Amino acid sequence: MFEKVDALKEELNKATAITQEELEQYRMRFISRKSVIADLFNDFKNVPNDQKKGFGAALNDLKTLAQEKFEKLIDGLSSDNDENDENIDLTLPPLPGTLGSLHPLSKVRNRIIQIFERIGFNVSDGPEIEDDWHNFTALNFPPNHPAREMQDTFFIHKGKDRVDDDQDILLRTHTSNVQIRLMQHTKPPIRSIMPGRVFRNEAISARAHCIFHQVEGLYVDTNVSFKDLKDTLYHFAKEMFDKDLKIRFRPSYFPFTEPSAEIDISCLICKGDGCNICKYTGWVEIAGSGMVDPNVLENCGIDSEKYTGFAFGMGIERIAMLKYGTNDLRLFTENDVRFLSQFKGVI
Image (cartoon, rainbow, N blue to C red; front, top):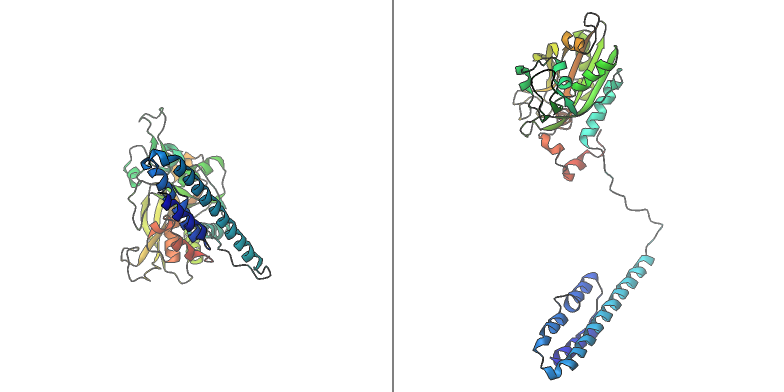
C-alpha cells in the first residue's frame, strides 16, 4: 500500500496540464470522488492496525499534494490565457454579431396593418376571453342555431339556457367580438381593422391550427356598398401579393353578413398547378366578407335604415403561407431556428 502512495507521488510531481481538457483529466484522476486517491481511502479498512497510523498520514499528505498541484495547474492555465489576451489586436474590426429578426407572422401582420392604414383604417383591439353575446349572439347567431357549429369553441364556463342566467364564457373564435364592442361604443363612421389571436377546437394539420391569428375589418357609414367592399379587398390583395394576381369572389354564407362572399386568389405556391394547400384546385381562399347584416347593426344600437357597412376577415397564417411560399402552417409555431432564420431581411 505504501508503494502505491509513493508511485502516485511520483506521478503527481510529473503531471502537467496545458489545456482545459488535460486539467480535467488530472482532476478526474487525483481529485474527484472516483479518483485513485479516493480508492486508497476506501481500502484503508484493509490496512493492518499497526500500520494504519503511518498509512493514514501518508494518504493525507498525498491528498494535500494533489490539491496543491491542481491549484498550481489552474494558475498556470490562467497565466497562459492572460498572455494570449495581450496578443489581441484591439484595432481590428469586431466579428459581426448574430442578430435576430421579427417572426414572419409579425412581419405579415405589420404589413397588413400598413396597407389598411394607408386607406384610412385604424387598429382596434379587444379581449381574448369573451362572453357568448359578443362572440355569437350579437353577430346573429341565435341560441342553439346550427351556425354555431361552424366554429368548434373552447368554453371556459357554461351558463344555463335561460336568458337571465349568466352567459357562456369562452375563448373567442374570431376577432368579430372587437367589431361588436367597437360598434357599441363608437358612432359611425367606423373604419377599423382588428388583428388578434383566436382559438378553435380544430385538429392541427398543414392547413389548420387550434390557435391562430386573424385580421378582421369593418366599415360602417352612410351609402356603403358591396362595390366598396370589392375595391377594398382588391386593393389589399394586389398590395400584399402581386399586381397581376388573379382574384375571384365566391358567394358564401355567414350569419353576420348578407350578402356574403369568400375571396380566392390564384395559388402562389403551385402557380395554379395544384398542391395540398389549394387542395389541387389552383385557388386558395384568403378571406370571408360581406355586407353587415342589419340585425347586427341594430344589436349594437346603430340605425340600419341610415347606415350600411361591410366586414371581412382573414387568417394571418394563411396570408403568410402564400406570401412566403410555405406549405405547412405548423412551421410558424414550432420555433425552429433553421426555419425562422430564413426570414432575416425579408419584408
